[in-house]
Length: 405
Ligand code: SF4
Image 1 (cartoon, rainbow, N blue to C red):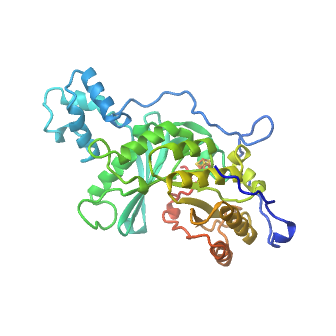
Image 2: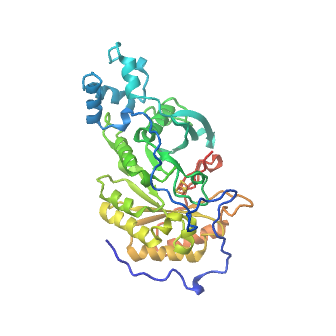
Image 3: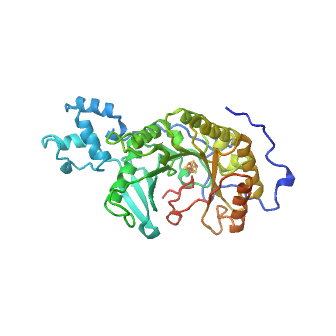
């Protein structure tokens, strides 16, 4: 645990002469508490959960369930292989299972969870945004992106979101419910099917599949902690129990749920951790990311730093650059100062350029302002990379700026 010396966020002389645009929801009203604060919902409403699916269970639990259903426990491995290695839930393709009772068994273990509503392609077919309908009609999205040498899927973890950020369409309607572990996992398996069918750009080699997962779709992943963690286990568990992916290639992001960040650091899972900060001063961040009213900038950065100290994994700070709102050079300097106060070499900043949205307060910074922001961080010794905003043109870009339908 660290206790860096606190310094005042700024002095008036630090602030440059550029205007200060304040965050506000455009075209909708943020739900508020009786005290006038933006409403935060941490708990999922008590609504019906999707039927249990094989991917909700550990291998031991799958074996127990199969026994309960009157099947030998070794069927668990066979079914897991079909799902996690061959991406199939089609009984016709499961010729290693006895014909009698096969359909019933598949129905019991693989209830359909995601129905594809729409598929939008961009970047010459190298990016696909999927819109899925869940069993109760809730809509979520995932975005599949091919890069040279890797394929990334941005997944959703909640239907709706309770964090109520004023720039985010997902948060407008509040939290519908937490997604189940299997609903999260099934987004990856569905993406692997699409890749295997040769539907994502130009195939580089025949055994391609999703190599990287980012929890930056709909929802605040750490508000659905248990199910998200179980999903991460399915991603990294060795095949056929899970997908056998590398934990390092899985990025869990948060707007700053501090106790959950600390819990995550205690897990024995070296995932990549990203904090969506978007402002280094509480004055702005209280309005931009309402959860900041609960856990302040310094508390969130402390928790991120402790994640690094515990796991040895370098932390990412996500920072969407919004014109005249959070893109001032003094904010870059303040961010650098706060990060350097904790130590060196523990963090990487990813400024995210927004798309120009004429007439909106949520619009892109001027290129020279972006450059100045990046240079200020770099000059202070903070590794900084302007992030690729692939998928923006189909509203599929993430970094906590996801848009719902
Ligand atoms: S930006 Fe992220 S955390 Fe904020 S409301 Fe939207 S989905 Fe939730």
